[in-house]
Image (cartoon, rainbow, N blue to C red; front, side, top):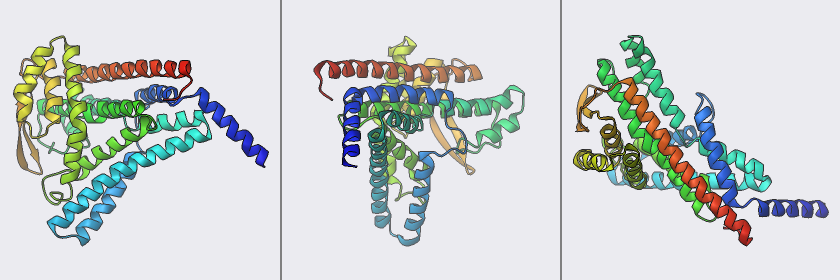
Length: 352
């Protein structure tokens, strides 16, 4: 038995020496991006966000039942935000380490699946196509119904242009927190010794899920969700600005895009979504924002961009393509950097 344990210990140590973390990260990033592009998030499959959502729902039930004071709910909100984000990151790290300890190939497979679950590129495209398909055949009622699955606004009385605006706003807002920010944190984790690509991306996904479930100013989440909303704003701030910069450079008119964002995005209540939406609007030559209705209550959002063109399905597909190109650009730069890092590791014989 001792001999067998010694053999496997030596085997795994030898395998690790030929598979440094930088090389594993390179494979995981590439495979995860491919999984999201080809498969996405099939409906009904197990997903980390479902587990997070279950935990948040149970926790908020407990808080609303037993904590009635504003102070108690605010403290509970801090515990919820820090607990879920740190806990999700730690669980992601533990799973990645355990799978890699068993076998490097298993580690790559498990981490690729976990990281792919953090990317929403395919899901965004599928959602947009799901709404635009009935529009193409003139079925506005069906388009409204399908749109209601993806947005919080009232959709029953929306015109075709308002449906298209809602789709474009959803695609461009979620391009940052659903696609680019998770990649940013995956690359950041890959650059940090001992972290890896999964933990920070999973942690950010937890912050994003918290914001979407409890990060509201309205009751009953006013006190419970304040910390989650601010934390998500803080974690998204830098990736969002990098997305705007990337889009501006890709457009070939960075000065114009930045000027429009500086003029319009600052009027948005969110420190991030307005910038993301405005950058796309400036590039596409369309205008988003305006009056939306939520449970029969009007909410006015600032107008972003110039109405040079009408919002059409073609403009929405252009926005999706811009997101894909930005994602591939960041991914390519990240893989290039990790490749150089891996070559340096092999040449020096030292792990990062």
